[in-house]
Each structure stands twice: as C-alpha cells, then as structure tokens.
Image (cartoon, rainbow, N blue to C red; front, side):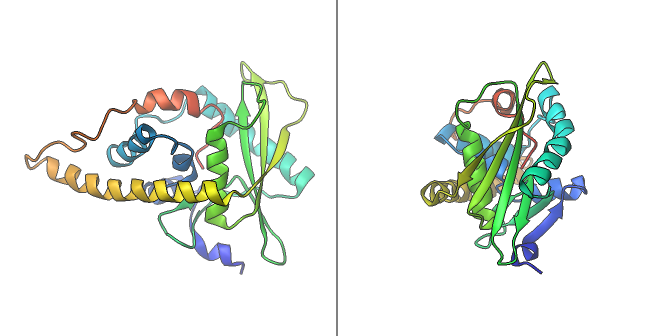
Amino acid sequence: MSAHLLRVLADSNDRAAWLKARSDGVTATDAARLATPSSVKQVVKDKVMGTSFNGNAYTDFGRQREPEIARWVMERHGIPASGLLFHAEASKSHLATPDGLHCDEEGRILLAEIKTTNKVWKRIPRSYMRQVWWQQYVLGAERTLMVWERHQDFIVVDREPKFVWIDRDEAEIAKLVTLANEVLKDVEKYRGEFAQYSTGNAAPFQGYGNTHSSSDYTQSFYDAETYA
C-alpha cells in the first residue's frame, strides 16, 4: 500500500462522514482563504459558528461538470479522479481532498484540481494557488495539474478544458502552515468559549475584530469551488 493511503480519513462518497472529518481541521478550501488577518478570522468564525452557505448555482454547476472534466483529465493526462480526504504527515488537522491523484511506482504523487468559471483567466486566481499549494503540502506532491472549463450562463463555451501545471512552492506552503496553525489555535479557544456561552459567560469573539459575513465571501470565491 502506498504511504499516502495510510493517511486517508474519509471518502466524499460518504458525504456525512467526509464533512464531519473536514470540520475538525483546516482544509484546502480553508487554506485558499488564508490571505489577510480578516480572512483568517473569518475562517475561525466559520469553523466555530458554522456557515449558512450550502452551495449556489455555481457550485451546483461545478459539481455537475466535474465528473466530465475528470474523465478528460484521465484520458489526456492519466490522473484518475479522487474523492479521498487526506491528512498531512505533520498534522492530522491539516486536510485536503484533491480532485485527482496519481501515484507512480516510485511513490511520486501528481495531483489534479478542477474548476469551472464564467470568467476569462489571464492567470490562476491567487486563492486557487493557495488551495493547490496546500494540497501539495498535505499529499507531499511536487506538481498539480490545474484544469478549468469556462461557461457562459452555465453553457460550456470551451471546446475542451484549459490546463496549466503548478509547481510546489515551499515558501508559500510555509506561510499557509503558519496561518493554519493560528486558525486551529483560535478555533480551540473559541469553541471552548462558545460551549460556555449558554452558562452566562460573555459571547465568544468579542473584540476579535470585524470580519465580512461568510455569505459575502462565498459569493466571490465559490464560483467553480467544489470543496477541497
């Protein structure tokens, strides 16, 4: 058995178990948001309080198209689809579910990440770069095939998906690991405060700073996002 398979926590085919396992750590979707102090705080609040976002037309379309795009990835690049949730070697709270994963005979891992978008990309959005780097860190991968398909009013306009290879970036990964550990530390703290709130203690997050609502953020981020 390949070493990375020893770090599987859940399978997205069992969505309830997969969501439960994700809630206990920092996922690649979370890591994609770790850009500013306010966004870090919002990730913490969403982890503690939960989020009302359960998807929209864009995420529904992305989930609909992902199997088709995944078949193209397999045919053209030999990377099979994956729905497994992994934890990093360094921490069981650092999590990722790549869209595609190939491990060769020498144990080297290649990943694939699939997106749909209604925009023309001149470069990969920075949030998606962070998502990819986090997945590479969790899996120990050196490269990721980023694949995207453009649509207009939910009608596919590309004859075939576009793609680019993204290399591992240790400096960016180090930043994300530091921020993720800050998130986990604060989540533990505020979950404790939240549990005590019903006993009459002060409400959690007082003085934690202003953050945007989760719905404001997801409107811009979740076009093409399928929870990694």
